[in-house]
Length: 254
Image (cartoon, rainbow, N blue to C red; front, top):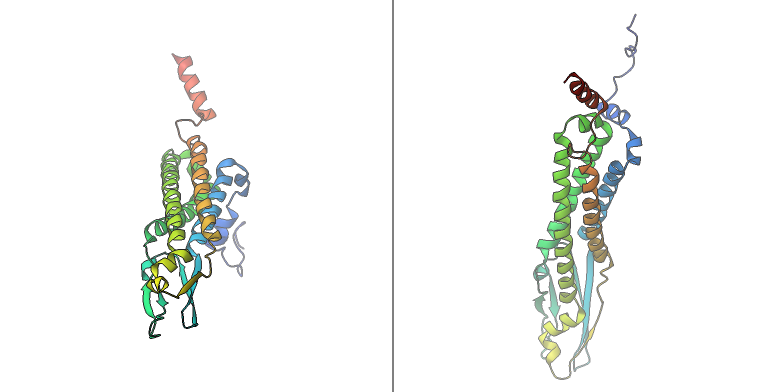
C-alpha cells in the first residue's frame, strides 16, 4: 500500500513549472507593490518594442531639365546609423549612373541605450514579480531583499529619466536628418539650373514618438514605485507583532 499523500503508481511527479505556478499568490497583484511591478513589466515591453521595431521612409523627386523624373526613396530604422544608409542621386547633366550618397548622422547610442534599458527592466520586473508572488516569505523575512530591490528601483528610475531624455533628443535629430528638405539640400543636382526637386514621402514618426512617451512613463512608474518598495525595508516597515511583544517583555522585566 502506498503512503497517504504519495502519488499513485501510474501518476507522474509534478513538473517544476507546475509547482511554481501553483505556488503563486495571485492575490498579491491587488497590492500596490505587485500591481506596479506588472505595469513596469508591460511598459518596458512597450518602450523597447516601439523603439526597436521602428522603421521609416523618406524621399524626394528630381525632375531634370530634359523632362526625366526620378523618385528617390530611402528606408531607415533602428538602430539609426543613418550614415550607413545609401541612396542614389541622379545625374541630370549627362544622365549617367546615379551617384551614391548617404544620410547624415549616427543616433545609435541613445537608441540602443534606450532599448537595452527596456530589456533589462523587463527581465528584472519579471524576476522581481515571481519572487514577490511565489517567495513572498523570503521578501518579508530577509531584510536584504527589500533593500536591494529599493536600490535597484532607484537606479532604474534614474536611468529611465536619462534614457528617455537622451532618446527624445536623438529622435528630434533623426527627424531633422530624415526630412525630405534635408534630403534635397544634400543633393548637389538640385542646385543646378532647370532642375526641380520636390519633397516625396514624409516619414511617419508616430511609433518613435510613442517610444519616448513610454520612456518618461517608465521613469514616473519606477520613481513612484520607490516609495512602495521603501515601505518594505526595515527603515519604514512596522515591527512584527512577535517583535513588539518581545520588546514589551524586555521592558517589563526591567
